[in-house]
Image (tube, rainbow, N blue to C red; front, side):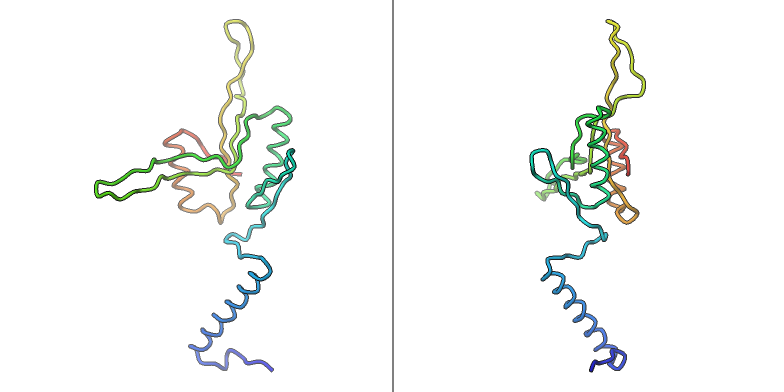
Amino acid sequence: MGIDLRDLSPAYQVKAMQQLAEQNRQRAAAKGERERKYHNQKDQRPTTSGGAVRFDSRKEARRYDELIALLHAGQIRELRLQPQFTLQEAYTTPEGVRVRAIRYQADFSYLLPELRPYRTETGVEVCDWILVVEDVKSRATKTRVYEMKKKLMRERFQIEIQEV
């Protein structure tokens, strides 16, 4: 025997819905689960040292697999996970208020060879390596804060963030 929410007054309907939502949160916490903001599923990959690299999403883990293959093939080098860039240093206002630094944390960065190699004076063919910064994005994760930091990266470091 159950109670139909429509039989309750509007104030009690709201209260009942809040209690049901809280019960669902408690059940999820008891199972060790947590509601994720963007409905992503965490994933991990084994490392050569026997550890594991954890990723915020399966999409990010798949991109890591692709970059590792490119690294082993020699097509990229110096792959870094979660590199940080300081967009604005911390400072203290004249009133003595401390303002924290603004930082951007990308998903990956690596060096990619420039398309046109050139010859040095000694005749040796070399190529320059260009820094590539990547962020795995979906429509939901392209927030206003991300867009602002993307513009600051372009202005401060002349780096275009590659969205995957």
